[in-house]
Image (cartoon, rainbow, N blue to C red; front, top):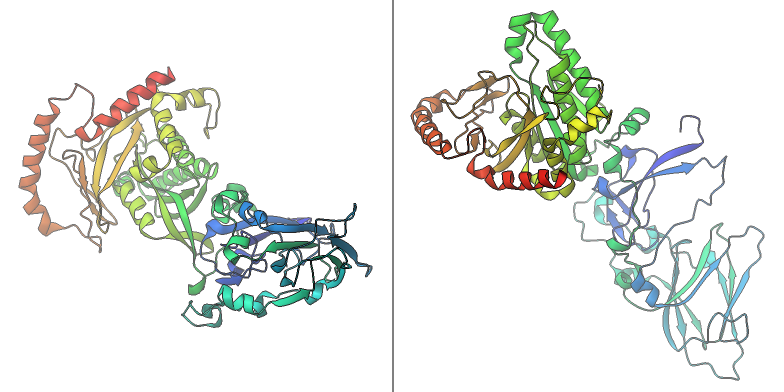
Length: 561
C-alpha cells in the first residue's frame, strides 16, 4: 500500500445475500445506510463484524471491471435455477447466442415450460421477469430474444430507494418492500419456450444469463450465514499490531448516525498497585522512570498479540481478538514487570490486571479507535478487584470461549513455563523462570463481584504469580479485610465467602457514612469465613465457589501429564 500497488478497502456485506453493498477507502467514510446492488436490500450498516477488509490492486497495475458485483447463490436458490450461463465481457460490440429447445449440441436445455420466470444477474445488476406464454410445439421456430444488458439493468437507487434514515428521517419502515421492488421490474414476453437468447453485454461487465423459477426474493437471493465464505473482518484488524502500524489513521466516523459496534472484544485493564505511595517513597523523577519502564514492558507484551488502546495515568487499556491472546500477553507482562521493575529496596513493582469480554461501541477518541459501553466499565472494575501481581478473568469470557478456558488451564498447568524455557514468545525469553522451575502461576479462588453500576453479579477467577510478595493491600481471609484507596474512588475487596463488593462513589470520595455501619458485620462475617476455612485442605486456598473448578483443574493437569 505504501508504494501504491494495492489499496485497502472496507466493504460492508449485505445482510441478505452477503454481497458487498459499498466499498470505501477509509473506515470513517462508511455510510450508515446502503442498498445492495445485487439483491436491492436496504442495509443498516452498524456492525464492524459485517465489514470486510479487502486489498485491491491498483487499476494501473491490473485493470478490473469496476461494475462487477460478486454474488454467491445459495443451495436453495440454485434448486430454482433453469438456466445458468456465464457471458464474457466484450468491448467489440459483438454478442453471444444461447439457445433452449432447439436440439443438438448447442442447446443449453429443453424448451421452457409456460409460466413466469425471474431473469437476473447480480454481477451486472440486471433484474427482470421472463414470461413464456405457451408450451412450444415441434412446428414452432425458436423465438429470437434480443437481450441488450443495459436495457435490463436495475439501478438500486431507482428500483429500491433507501429507507428514510438515509434522507435524514428517523422512520426506517418506509423503505421499498420486495413487492414494491418487483412491481418496478421490466417483463420480457416470449410466445413459447423455444428461445434464442442473443445477449449483447454492453455495460463493460461480465454477465450471467440466469433464469430461475419465480419465487420470493428471500428464497432466490438470501445466502444463509453457514454458506458464506469467511473473510477478514474490520472488527478483527483493529486489534492487529501490523494493521495499526500501517493504518493508524483508519478511525471510525464520529457522526452520531454512523456508530459502529463490535459483537465481542476482549479488553484488558492494568494498574500499578500503590502508585501514590510509590511517588512519595521514590520521588517524582525516579518513580516516573520506573512507571515508564513498566509501560514499555506492557506495550511490548500487548502489541505482540493485540493493541494498546490508551493509557490513563499509570493504567493501560488494551484490546484483543481472543481470550488466549489476552491471557498470554498478560502472563508475559506479569512475569517481566516483576523481574525487571524493581523498587530501591529490591521488591518488584506490582500491578493488578482485569480481563473481560463482551459487546462494545467503537468510538473515535484522540485519533484512535476507542471502546464505549458496559463491557468497558466491567473490565475496568474487575481490574480494581484484583490483588497485587494478580489477573482476574471473568466467567463471561471463560464460559463462552473453550479456547480461552484451555489457555487458562495451560497457564496454571506449567505450559507457560515450558513455552518460555523453549523461547516460545515471551518478550524477554532469556529471563530466568521462577525458582520453583515450572511453577509460574497459582490459581485464585472463584469470586463473586458486586460492582457498582452493574445490575448483576460478575463471577471471576484468575491467576497470580507464584510466591508473589504480599503487601497490606492483599486480603487472605485470615484477618479483617483492608481497604485500598484509589484515585478513582474506594474499592473494598472482601474475601467473604468468595464475595467482593465495589463501594466506589462516582465522585471518587470514600463512602465514609457506610464504612462505620459495615465494619461490625464485616468482622463477624470474616470470623465465620475463617471457621469455614478450617474445613478446607491446608494450603488449598480454595473457597466453596472454587471447589468444582479445582476438580476440573486437577483433571486437566492429569491429562497434560
